[in-house]
Amino acid sequence: MRKSLELFKYFIMLAPEPHPVVEYYTLTSRKDVKITKYDVYHLLVILRKSYLISRNKLKGGFLVPLPQLFFSLSYEYVNEYAKLSNIDPNDFIRASSRRRNIAWCFNDLMSFIESYGDIISLFFAVVDAIYLRSELSFRAVTLLYVSTDVVPEPYSYIIPGIESSLFERIELSKKVLSRVYSLIKDRVASLTSEYTNPVYINARNIASAAFFYVLLGEGAKRILYYPIYNPNIPDPHLALLFSLDERFVKYSNNWERYLLKLNE
Image 1 (spheres, one colour):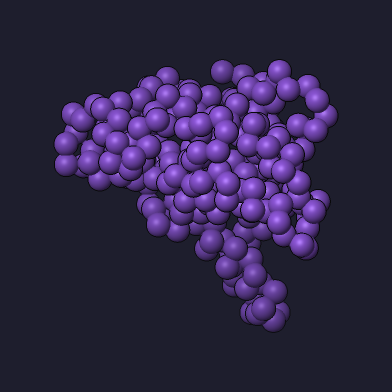
Image 2 (image 1 turned 90 degrees about the vertical axis):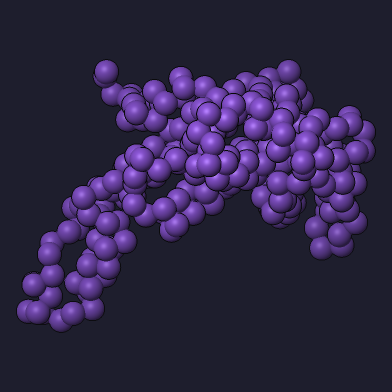
């Protein structure tokens, strides 16, 4: 477990820029955890085949974490989009990649978007629906709920009864986020299905958890920094995705059907 955690932590801490592959292998020199070069190799294979990293060489060279890169480009795209609404997203990605000296990532990044665009749309639809677009602020409801235990009776009765609203959203969050996580695991497994050796199973789990963690971080940013949904402002997380392929919009608009298996 400790070995898996360290491999996981290394990936999620990577910035959206080129990193020497050899640095990942420095984990094998640590004395407090037994990580072998084969552990690193198996994880890098799964990450590359599932389009979660891009590598410029099969041996050595540099790698770039694609989820982190995608969201970094999304923020950049929104700033460009606000100034020039007719910018072509493909041209934008190419130009931005050249500026970052990672033009070799373009095809892999587009494969990442194609492979996970629906999941990204679903995740942020959940964040918006449960945490941002609700009539009651999730944080405000939590504050009121906690206050009912702080204020003694009979004064606590003046605090609005919000238990059902709070717990319903907590349970819905658990259900839909569990489904999102399962979709990620299934997608990673399908993209790496040719690797049948059992040693790759743990690498798939690490890759799935790492991508989910990156999504959670972006979801937290969305709640903290974009608390008010405004359809007239370019979305910092989804504007680039939707500009590249509008079909992903249907997942965002129908997230309940895709995650809760509701009838249309």
